Image (cartoon, rainbow, N blue to C red; front, top):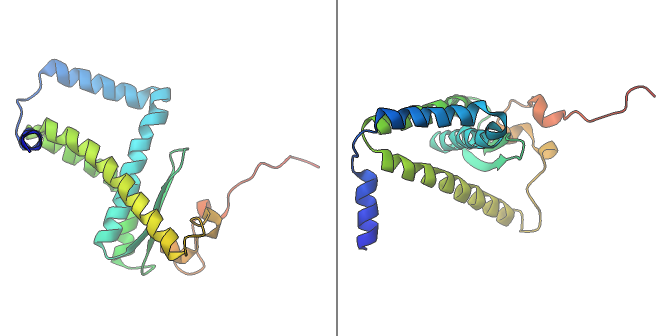
Length: 185
């Protein structure tokens, strides 16, 4: 138990502020991760996790039922929730994904400003783990409700009710997927 107590006390305890050189080095690394295309192709997965996680978190907070969260290798994602297709819960759920990554960054800056760098590092490990566990749990729950024989529905089978759009309306990205067709005859 002493090890866990030590980790916990370090995670919640305040640390001295970093030196100016460390701050500049961190800013340079962050700029490289965002500005250098090969690095950005990997880094943007974290932004997608924050985006989709924010959709899911607010869906649960607003009383909607979370049906699933999907991440794709092209760094796109999809969060499915059930509930009224209109109203404050749907609006909050849709809005949350777009402000979520910025609010997470703002919260991280605040935590750093209060001197809790180690706590922030632990949070950056816990949040993706939470996301993975939540996604696995939702997938398992969905398979169990389907009798355990079917896999989750492909995107083309998602109804407008699943994502909360008004009846008969759905975003083009879910219904019309362009295919490569030869030009001419």
